Length: 316
Image 1 (tube, rainbow, N blue to C red):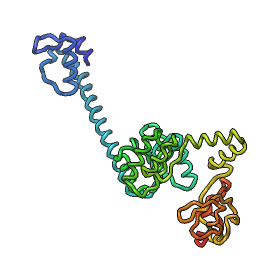
Image 2: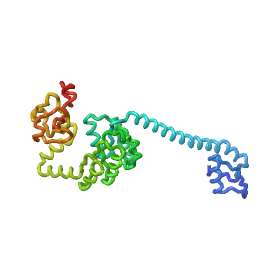
Image 3: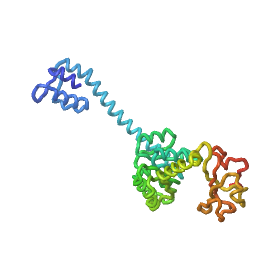
Image 4: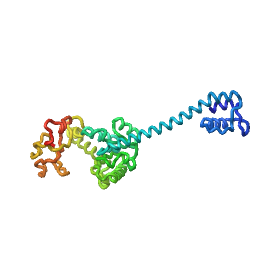
């Protein structure tokens, strides 16, 4: 529109000095397209008036359509997001929140799903838009933001969460997230991944129930593989779900009560009794009791205990 007015500037009159230059053309285009129209610059020749009627007016209408359309689109998207969040909050309870959807976060989610956790019970929080998009593509609820911000945690309904897994890139961020989570939900089970072993006590003091040192774990696996490639292969197999062997936890079946751990078909590694983990050779768990849980090594594709033939309520 500025170009149109500049080319036909003799067809316009400025009430200030009678002439229209480039600056006047920019000014006229601005006030005309935004429908402000002060009237200090006006088309005076028939050609200029025809141009305003058949070219400038459609441009003005198009500008309004874009402005109003964009505003309505933003309002509609925001309204849909609010309604979606409201519906989600009504049904979300005892869910798992994963803070950070990087390599560690994805692996944690995959492990949860492999162990029977439903995708609609997992919520992802990440400050990266690409990670949020990936979580959405994986059919999980996701919130874009910094989990150290309590507002973001509240949007993810951390107050009713059963478990929170923290896999941030920085240990200091992990501490802040853990403190915020523990303040909002004192009962949630909080698992945190850290890079440095020195930060483990700090995380535990901050309220973490379990702390995994990623660098130390990788270093031990590298050392084992160096000392014994076969041992390293077995350890890697145990850490990989879906094939080979896997480590799993299951309740003691009714027919296993009163028997020693060695009599269980699965290879028992530890027995959990009253919330405490005992090694399979511990004399305190020489005989299995109702309510015990077993940490076992079993084939990865083995049928879950609850789906096995004969696993009835008495087994539970």
